[in-house]
Image 1 (tube, rainbow, N blue to C red):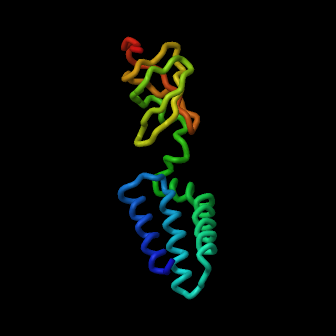
Image 2: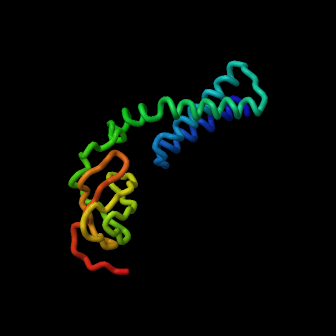
Length: 151
């Protein structure tokens, strides 16, 4: 790929992440790797195509592993570091019947979460549930309403 192609692809990926896609900062690092590869081509470093792909992959994956969480936390205000119970009390909508101990996916503060019904009763499809706790990656919920369970 020419150096200009790498830079253009990199900026397109970064722009897509920042404007249209909410990919949790993965495309930022893929785009940065493409820009770095383009800059290397601009300064005269020539690599065979397989070398370009290997370097691109190493830069993209390496930067994601080393820096993504730190940058994401800093730019998103630390929300990704976990709620540490601050989600407790929030109300979420449940889209399917969730028996006691059952798991489902819910949306809270713009993100999808796995939630477990820790209450004594099943939660009906379409009912609201209150978050009672979180362990950083999973919400613990209890049903709020007494809607009848529909099968």
